[in-house]
Image (cartoon, rainbow, N blue to C red):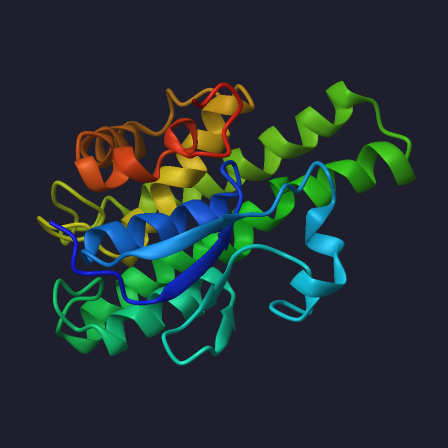
Length: 222
């Protein structure tokens, strides 16, 4: 169940994995924010009025109740966890928190940036790679990163989710990256733990509501 609107605004794009992470986090914490669509394909992120919210001209950006604009998905999710401590996204123990952050950062910092739209556009438009070559690049880096994540998930702390029996910051990052991997045709057979955890996440309404296909700006959405 969500709380009353918190007068927050989330600048988002339906297929942005970083935006997807924050949408999940908001849902898991029962928080609401007005979603403002920024179409990356139409380069709306480069509009001067959006650059005021995010000088990087990337998504997402979250405007707080006080009107402060926050950027970078991991920083936004930790802000939400600190500002609204109910339904925490990080475990209590310091070692456990470090493990969850490490999993989240492998995905958000090491994997996702190498398969985002602006990198793929640079590969094809500036470097002259074919679409197939760019796709091979994307699959290579996702597979390399997922191999590390799969090994990390073999630790005893893994449960139904990345860490224990409730979704954490790590799951907020994992589900969108699995969506990307499937979209780019990555063979998921070598990653049974990732597949199992992603399936557990996708069964939750909070993840379903955040899914790209269920966003108002998704093509074909009424």
